[in-house]
Image (cartoon, rainbow, N blue to C red; front, side, top):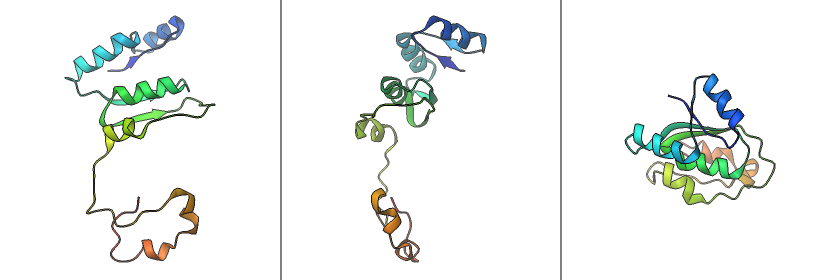
Length: 122
């Protein structure tokens, strides 16, 4: 099933014409929880490009589900890490052998990462 929500009536009508079940935000939340037995959506598309829509998508997705944000975000996003980790984080201390800061990835010695004892870098 595909559900859609929006504040604009004409976009909800367009979603319905394309086969989606168009609901208000409140209706959507209760319906998704109902049809998934409280689990949440397997996948959520955020196509608006607004922070509140992205946060709503994260709230609606099940743990380890997929959120695809193709909306054009023109402002800085203020996401709280726990919003993401509460959905997807699984501690894997036995599999993580190296840590690389994204700011230093190009300066990182790849020979260290490719050593025989390496399992996964994060």
